[in-house]
Image (cartoon, rainbow, N blue to C red; front, side, top):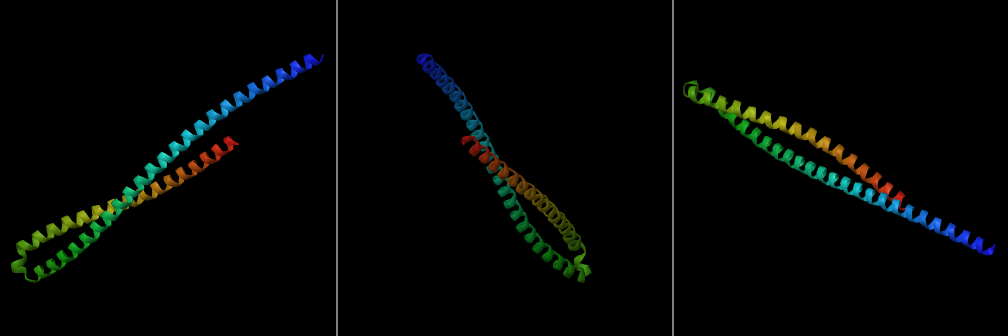
Amino acid sequence: LEREAALQRFREALDERDRNAVAISELARQTERAELEAETVRARRDETAEAEQRAHLRAQRDAAELRSMRGELSVLARALERQTASREEAGAESARLRRHLGARQAAAHEVVLRGAGADAQDHALRGEVDLLQRELNEARVSLEASLR
């Protein structure tokens, strides 16, 4: 009877060991999946941050170009005013300056539109970075919970 009880305890210990091994294996798989997910989220966050940085640099470049064009437009506008004061000399030159001014205004307008697009893209990228940061935090919490 004592021997049977010892065998029963031994079987129970083996069963518990097997259950523990399965649980450890499942926990290891969950941990690996969580680590892969966290790495994916980090990679997406990094890509988004890089895209945001590029958009920010593009917006800065466009703003500098716009300032430069505004300066050029100011110079061209003053030149146009001087030219229109003396109509005899200004005939051909005035038409050329108007065309050039129009082209520069169109280019400045395009830069303004690109800047607005870059601002919208910058805002969208910031939102995506925030989302990815939350996902990363959730993945970390999930990983920590699965490790406990």
